[in-house]
Image 1 (tube, one colour):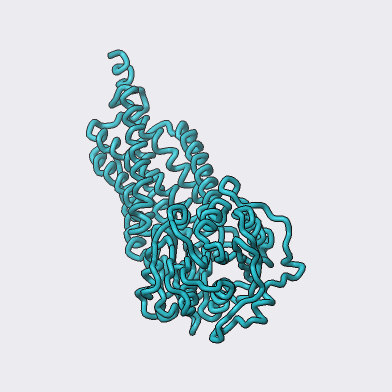
Image 2 (tube, helix red, strand yellow):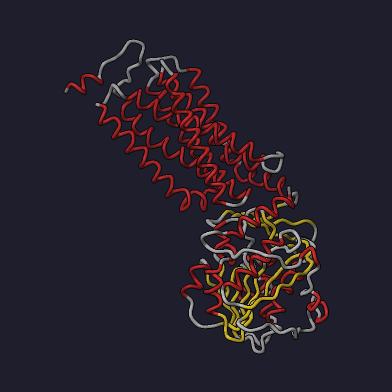
Length: 517
């Protein structure tokens, strides 16, 4: 009883929250907690999409965000009066900045020289404002609850909001709304809190200015929500400098197709995957040095390659009876199977009765797979982040080696031996640590530059290769030349890429960062 009385006093100069606001304010805790975490997840995801290396980006974004929240909590001590009015204005500001955060980052990425400055400035601003929210709410509610109840209620709603956000973001928001719309929707949730409080206070204070500001922000967020597709398209046109003809966010990646003249290009998370002007060079170099060294490649496994272009080359070999293609994203394989123009590009390989598509995580799939394959084609995106880097580890290659027939041959796309020589030779070192013998080779693909691949087998790899006559790029003599490395690409000491060190991801980021910087 004494505790309750002590907490229901009304010190001079402090505003006592009307009883009608208690429920609204407790619900506000849930809303602001959910919104705050959504903005944090948006910033981390966008940073990993645009800058790569998801572990580093999420770690630095979360650390900066939490630090900024601490600053905001510390700053709340300087709010000595009108806590409710300050809270309402904080909600309006968060709605404006957080709601436009995803759209703004996408639009600014191709336009600013150092994107990280913009990114972390935005994270700091949102974090400081979010850090102000809970301390202000606790002070506003302190006259309505005993201290124990107050802390329990506020923290309960806060943690429940965090759970809601963490489940909604990957399962619903990103795949169904996309990141730009998600920002606008949760900005509207923040401004809704402000408007609800202003309506409840309409008889007790002057609210015209705050209402006007809230309505302006609401209008801008609604307009942004309606124009979300256009905003995404404008940002991508500026980023790619090419007309965008298709764009889609899936739970796994951002897919963008561009066209300029007769050149069709595919980008995944901003990274070029192929150009129709020269993709045949890449895919012939990827596939035929393997098939040409296998006496009877009846069964072939393709890991990655959801565009069906590697499968197109494999299915051109009449000796191949069955192909299993494992690609994570069903949206990718469906797009390249069901879109006539894209299906024509891959010669309708994804609809072939000789091919079976498995939409699964390749790392898990190979650990559960049984049987053996005469040839294995590993065509994953570059190891720009740790989720991809695990597909280049000794652990993964040991499992793939288990699926490779005793006389089988596999190949791995291995990045550029010219731009990133340590990264390139790390792939060979890792395959050898997995018990395989290797031979590196490279080909010039204009869209990528000098590009590298690595052959691997249980036995010593033969020099002799049998190639069909219909190839546009490879001949027996040019294929032999691909195994010759000049001094600037020659083999050098390189670490083994393991799950617990991810050395390849770090060297890849370092070497390509120097080249692109």
